[in-house]
Amino acid sequence: MNKNERTFTDSTLLRAFVEIAECGNLTFAASRLNRSQSAISVQIRKLETELNASLFVREGKGMSLSAAGEKLLPVARGVLAELHKVQSLFKTPLNGRIRVGIPDDFDEGVLERALTDFTQSNPGVEVFATSGCTAGFPGAIRANELDIAVCSGPDIGNEEIFLQQKPVWVTSQSMVLAPGDPVPLAVVNHGCWMGEMPKTSLEHHGRPYQIAFKCNGIMSLKSAIRAGFAIGILYESNVEPDMKILSAKDGFPALPTANRSIIIRPNAPPDLAGAMADAIRRAV
Image (tube, rainbow, N blue to C red; front, top):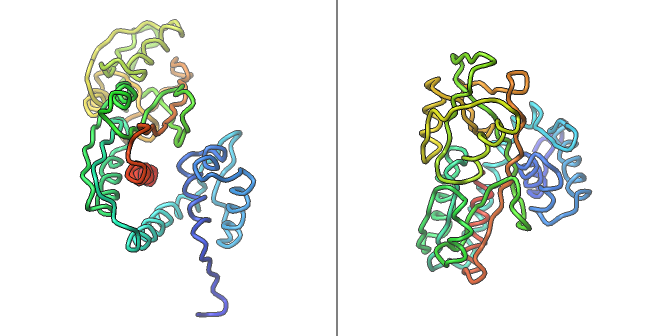
């Protein structure tokens, strides 16, 4: 090795970096890693020193990736994934059956990444997966219909939050709405908080609206938005290039942050549930 080359071998630095990048918040990242905020801050400073790059932009209570951080993130995820594969080679194989509920409004690919990761690492485990509105997941956990599920909402009780996402008002790039016109809304129609939020937010804001489109899933909602047929709410990470975000200057109120938590049935197989929870966290 060239004596001028700099190396680092501590994967915990990369893991801390990825957790903060996914959470956008040092407090939540520290909670997910079971470390103190000061310890995580030290790890990030050490990584930035070793790479001679600033990886985050500090913004009030949050943290967003810098240009260097955006460049590092996919590489760091790849390295951690490969290390996980190495570790899996020497683990006692898991067996059994696990039932998991994953939101249908996650970024495209999360379900695929989570299930691929889990099944490749645990080929002896039978997986039953449900994707849909999270409103019914807690009841399914209590009814012994699911072993583990991701739940969402602005207030999810005492469960540990592992991810926060920002909902935004979205329409097509071509749609034009006059200030006094009722807002043509596209809403998901399965009783969850994301379906009610656009209506209650506009009502509290005193802006008239009419329901132009109802659907049962995120893909149909996005189709109506892309077509310029209606305005809806998506997570910021789900906004596509041919869509535009509407803000207060367009007459649309701010929306509450969505919290994601993982809930596990008390009698669920602990090894299987833990492995699935890890796979979900790595996938987001």
